Amino acid sequence: MKKEGLRRFLDTVTIVLTVAIIVALTSALMRRVGLLPGGEENYRIAFISEWEGDPEVYLMDRHGDHLQRLTNDPGQDSYPTWSPDGRQLAYIHLGDNNGDGKITLEDGTMLRVMDLENGQNKTLARFSGLAFALQWAPRGDRLLLGVVEDTDGNGQLEPGADHGVVRAISVTSGQAVILTAEAVPFYQISWSPDAERVAFAQGPQPFSLCTVSSRGGQPSCLIQGAGQALAWTPDGQRLTYARTSTMGTELMTIPVQSDAEATPEPTSLTAKPLPAYIIAHLAWSPQGDKVAYVAGGSQGPKDIFILDVTRKAVTELSAQINGDVGGMSPTWSPDGKYLAFSAQEGDANSVSDIYVATMGGGVNRLRVGTGNSYLPAWRP
Image (tube, rainbow, N blue to C red; front, side, top):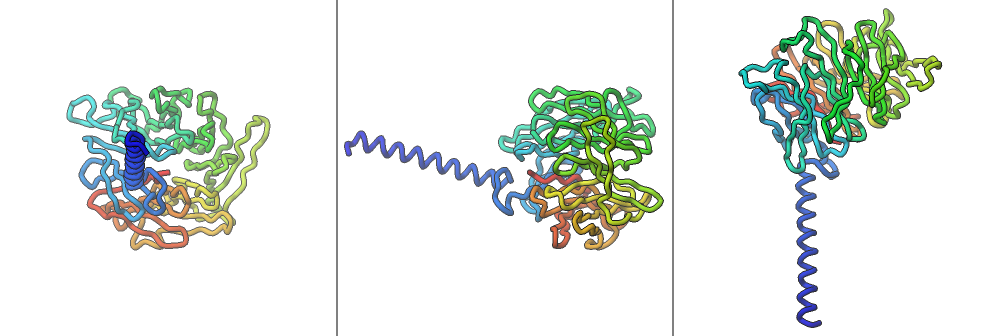
């Protein structure tokens, strides 16, 4: 081989090896922060914590290790939600945006998006009012935002006000489509699995279970007498809700009919009525075999339960934790092996922490701190 050809060959080999090393190092780094599949190390939970003062967004694995603080801004962060590809994290920020030294609704609610690959953090949109829900669309192109509006115009909510507006916001432009034609009382909201419709429970009591096109339009209400909690079944064909009577509480499903003349028939998931709980939150496992829910009385702590749909069996997770438990925000890992939630052990002065329940196993309390931790969200 001539010297020129040998040199060209060696240069090519050097380039290939350099690229391979860069790819390997990049992949290792991305696995380290949970951006690529990698077995156990791929589990990541974003959550809100007040460990260091203001509520900030943190990241950890399912054991509570590899802790990272992702935000560090004066104010209050809440509702972390992942993009479907797990590379971006959206959250709500309420801070002193007008520089008067106070945080009020007048400052506005900021919708922020963080890119975990390059560390960039941008404000996508800003609204007047107090956010109560944020969810990324299953297709990744939009975010669903629910805001309780500043109804009296002076930075404060009217006493007892529960009016709000639901918006679908473009991730690329920040432009919003209002899904509710006017401010109405409403509660939990949720994307359909195909992102074509949004479900919500509309009040006041008795609540109505409704859906609306994710592009806007006239809402369609399926049934009255539903609880405030709702969830789509994983196949997107039915909606799940709670129905309470003097006999107790049942978890029901109802088909989402496209034919306006058809009368949808609800069916019960439970073998018999549960105690007369108030169901505050519902979450289906990805496989569609279990439903996690938050239940409790009008007074006292709320507990986390799991209904095995096939066996009609109910497991109370608080039975595996010492002390009284106030459970909130159950959320399933993408493979359905784990359920993360926040809970408060002991009296009202105790702090809440993040817990992870292993299906077929126990419940672990993660990263006990001096401040409250809540709103866990698994990376897809």
